[in-house]
Image 1 (cartoon, helix red, strand yellow):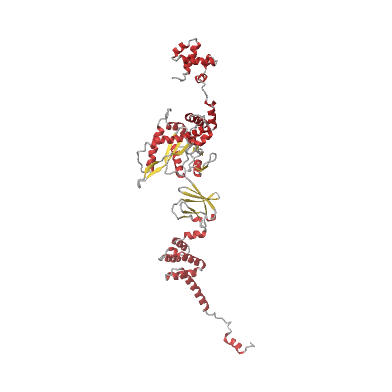
Image 2 (cartoon, helix red, strand yellow):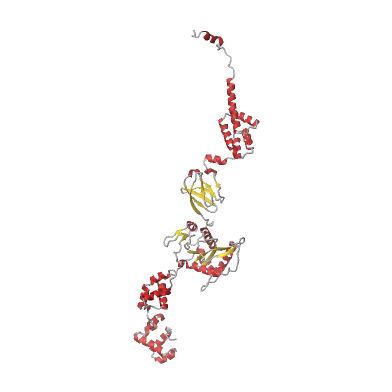
Length: 523
């Protein structure tokens, strides 16, 4: 074929034969090449004053450079102009609707003697590749875990409504072994993201040193190339499993190329194989995906004598950090002010939780999980409650209330009967009669408070007489007992007024006072 470069091993044979004194025709006949080709190589040998012995010692690529130096394009002024405008073209290509053909037309208007379209595209692509090199990342076993969401969703059918529920798929990859993991999520919220992470490290049986997520909102609040602001929940997860979170750079999929490749593989090995299956709940869908991912990890890799699972189990799993005894529990953080009633109001649950009354008016930091609510003031935990989702209700600890509020909250018929039992049996009987009425028990609490107050202020004999009269006459009210006590005091006063004077000799008598009537001057 005309213009085709000969193999350098054949050229070395040509040089050896020429060095041995063989003629051009003989060399051409022996090597099966034309006399013209033999002449061209021997002419280059003479023109370049090349030493045959040295040429036979060098490697084939270097030898080829001696005979076929070519015509380097970078010496062409057209190439120099194109290279000087390369940054402009790369920037323009990122614009919407801008094509290489459009840029080439503008290029020819600026430089009429420039390259044709094919050569323009060839050199532009070469320059773009040369100015955007990519590195080969060397991964250590058990060091990193790449995580991302697949671009396409997988679905199941709601059994009750018939609605097709589309679910995002969480994908993770250990780059050293290329071991993959997938988890079907309900959505892409932070709660679901952390649940998928917990499922992932649990499946792996350990945690790596570094977690590398994409800049999704569930993990990164504010993306930044140098100092991204992480979601606090993801920080808590990483701290719990002793991991470091290093998000990938913005718009740099090459930072997590292996998990991107895992997504492509899952499309063919999971999505495609399940496309004709129908699922009616997320649990069965997760089981099917897990089975297909297991098969994917057990499939022999091309150009390698092992599968992903074999390399993971043999070299990577033993190096993962041991998991804590209990799985991570998702925590949320809020700040509230302790209200005058000694409670904080959690708006997401529409529920009230008590705080010791001494912290009323203070700012409280609330940390809550799916089961517990912990309240902190001045960096100390002042209250812990079981989380309740009952809207408009109160969760109150008695000891958190002030003493008078504790009394108010403890009131009940049993409470008042106990208090009466500490005084006397008759008072218990009176309270039982009071609560036996048709009115609600709360209606009688104040009357019981009043009777207990009377008992403290009234002498025992007077109070007991009033109780006896009230019980004998079925007078079950505070006012009746109060009137009986008042009447008892009045009767005692009347008795004192009607009591006769004692007899004694020191009596002046009527005659003595008549003396003053007859003698007004007292003489």
